[in-house]
Image (cartoon, rainbow, N blue to C red):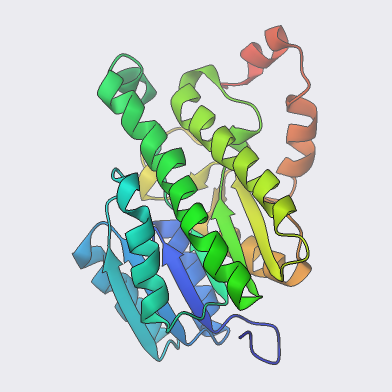
Amino acid sequence: MDNAFGQPQNVIVLGATSDIARAITRRLCAARARHVVLAGRDPSRLDEAAAEARDYGATSVTTVVFDATHPDLAGETVRACLDALGGRVDLVLIAVGELGDQSRDQDDPARAAAMMTVNLTWPAAALSALRAPLVAQGHGRVVVLSSVAATRVRPSAYLYGAAKAGLDQMCLAMADTLDGTGVTLQIVRPGFVRSKMTTGLAEPPFTTGVSEVADVVVRGLESGDRVLYSPPILRYVFTILRVLPRRLWRLVADR
């Protein structure tokens, strides 16, 4: 259960080796998350993230290796994570995703399929595996990292944006079905974030950092807002951009 201050103590992070996930994990551990399960693809980077979590205050850290290109095994991964916490979890962070390379991926059927699998299908399968156990325990929070790319898909990143849009819409509807169960689902829509994933790319307006995204997530856990933007000003920017006529959208989308 959350502690007396409403802070999660038992935490699962799926996609735990991303820069954003690690920044959020650090914040959670510093704020009294004590039992943490970190799941990701790279065992060595998981070990680094686990050591970091302990440094920030976690008393027990378990790592689970999975591959997001295999959604048929998502349920098995979720069960392993839940078992590591004795079946009781306060917060699940889903930070699985791949930006890809649109110029390469758009003409490669295998790469296009992989982008949809990693960014949409695997997280969707994991959410489906989580739903029943969380509802059965009667409490818990799920935070899913989406993207502002989900609000209106840019031509130059349509595979990534379309996959995130599918996940984003699924989460909005799933959150509605959880009303009254004691379980909540929140969506985070970061803009362009300085991280390993975006190294070498031009920074657009309102670029942010991983620490700033972590701040938004931690504050969002306290507020309970269903959709969180990082930086927060993007909520208003995309309120306008999503209704621009298509001709205008194509002029501004990739600047």
